[in-house]
Length: 140
Image (tube, rainbow, N blue to C red; front, side, top):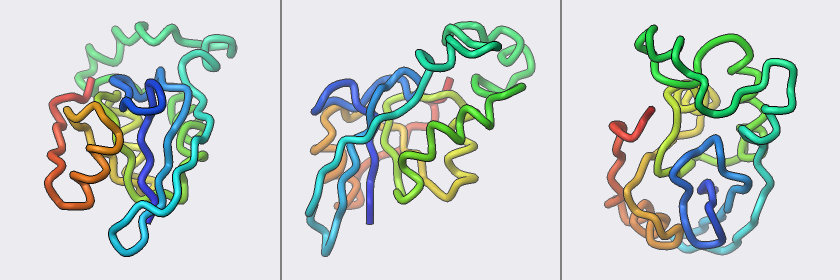
């Protein structure tokens, strides 16, 4: 099993999925972490330079629709690019993300977990022990 965490640095789970630059992917065998790998992740910075780039804060129309952030023209394509680096993972840990990427992760067969635990190792251990709480109220 592989578990991904969006990284703020080498130890902290990012508060915002779209702004993170990297994933830490851990491989788990027989309930123990056997490998750690840092993978690059595309996000808001890369998308700003694209023709219909976003600043990360231009979501008024989406909120008016009541869907949350991350829905609309071009979002699925962008989300697919974010997900590609972890398409071999079963779970992704974050401390916050938009509703659109949350939905697209689920569609890709990856379980997003929104946690209040900041430390990556602590969150992975809690997940493996079945005690990591998911906080869907952290969707934005």
